[in-house]
Image (cartoon, rainbow, N blue to C red; front, top):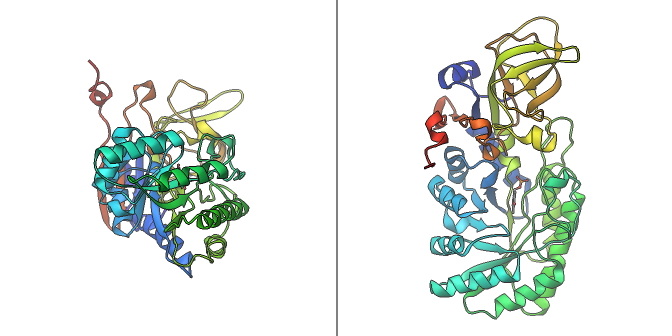
Length: 404
Ligand SMILES: *Cc1c(COP(=O)(O)O)cnc(C)c1O
């Protein structure tokens, strides 16, 4: 499921307790390298979308390997800085940046602000003026492309709240280019997440290219084009496109602008495969309809199954022999939607046994909650033979420490 380079998952579960996220530095580095290598005609700047997994130790691995960051809040700005991402490689996305967040980003000297509305541009200009700085502006284009993914993961349709349609984007560029406190630097678009076919990227890239051409006609030149994230992975039997094919699509679309830098903002692709969730069997239960393994991991730790009906691989870590049986792996939370996996064939497990839920490195811990007053899980980073407790398990008193 994941190669921990000889570090034993059972030992980790015993030492750090469960539920426990385990991340592999090697896998994250490997994905970053694979993405870079896919491009043959240019060197893209890969800005890791921190929201997929904001853990500092994991971020540090990617920052050291040369990645930039894509952030969506002031909190992520602080985390990106602590993880060691160079401000000159950080882009600030999101439809609702506050002026305080903008000010923090301006002081830090970020690469670009991806602007999504007229009012946001005005707020950015005002903030830059107040600080006597010039804000680097990228406009987020909404190309009205269907990424053919889960409806909740679609961001580039005209009906979505994200980005601006072409005419509005062009108007925003004109406004930005006239403002002394703004500096137009690029164009961005991000059409969705867990995209497994290339056509949406082809259409989005064509739309971005058309917009660049229109801007050039008006004398507005850009130094980079940012195609966002969204690269899908195989959780079950999805057949994602080859990275090399994606690279060809983008290199071809932007061939007329050899000087222009290409940016990408992958989150899931870099870290999903780099993480597993270890969880312990609390109880077994058999009803007239089904068999359940009740485990100590829940939708509060890994919400993707409950949120999207997502499928994650599940394996027995504790070796058990015997005929496999079909079980539902469910958590302790008081919701019928609280499951990690349904109808899985597993060897007969016993109380105290450890299971691993795979491909849990992206949008797992990042989306975790304390619902049902459950302290959040611990996170461990494995790097070669080194094991680092990257985040200690929350304690009961952490649950109410901020309350009065
Ligand atoms: C979420 C997001 C990403 C990353 O998406 P993935 O599907 O994880 O690659 C990139 N850019 C923006 C603006 C986002 O909102």
